[in-house]
Image 1: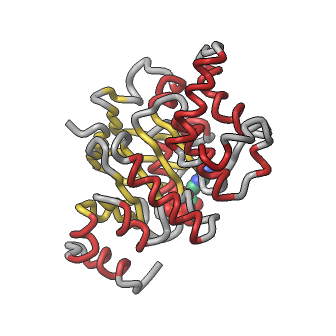
Image 2: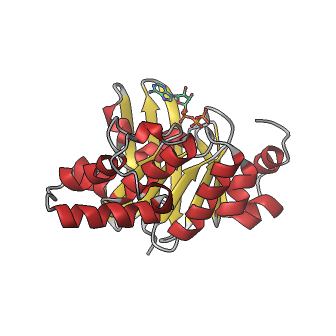
Amino acid sequence: MPIIEVRDLDLHYGKHHALKKIRMDIEERSIVALIGPSGCGKSTYLRTLNRMNDMIAGVTISGQVKISGVDIYQTEIGTELLRRNVGMVFQQPNPFPKSIYDNVAYGPRLHGITKRSTLDEIVETSLKKGALWDEVKDMLKKPAYGLSGGQQQRLCIARALSINPEILLMDEPTSALDPISTAKIEELLGELQKSYTIVIVTHNMQQAARISQSTGFFLNGELVEYDRTSSIYQNPVDKRTEDYISGRFG
Ligand SMILES: Nc1ncnc2c1ncn2[C@@H]1O[C@H](COP(=O)(O)OP(=O)(O)OP(=O)(O)O)[C@@H](O)[C@H]1O
């Protein structure tokens, strides 16, 4: 069974029809890339997977989003519980104005963990998963703002993983980073995929081709084509996909 099943998903911002009848199955422990020109609905779609659009005034959503078989828009499963299972990383690294340690310990503390040794362990494991431990292990009490942009982004990944989600949503996580930091994060994603399901919005088609197993091409709120990444790039079925990946627009 896919870990995420989306059916007939429609989203309006007021009168603006931003997502149109989206259908997508996402397999567990895979990386799915979402590509398409600016404004086509990629970020909006990503945010429907953890109900982040609910906070925006005037949004209406219909259809189904099931995570591990549970319709997240129909059940009593609170958004807090949902966000515990679905972590998110944004375009701009956004650490809290706290120490490196406290950034990672924040979520676990929120969920009631207070024991120092347990927190220490979670912080270390999460920073290791974020491929940052070796660089920061001797400066855990230093402010997160002192880290480079690429390190801050890996800290945000570690922070997202600290509460043990199954799914990680990433909205253009490397677009604000230099090529070396980007390469580090891409390498990290390959490692994380062994334990997590990752859905990533990217403007960089080479990146999508390098890191993902499946790719969804969005255009004007429609999921035009969704397939194995190799098929999307080598054998697109829809003319619009072909035009986009060959650089004819966007
Ligand atoms: N909070 C909002 N209120 C109203 N309209 C919105 C809001 N957020 C996005 N939109 C509109 O919905 C459409 C889809 O936007 P979205 O940000 O999902 O696209 P995107 O593909 O992620 O774009 P980009 O690649 O530029 O980030 C756009 O027309 C956008 O203007």
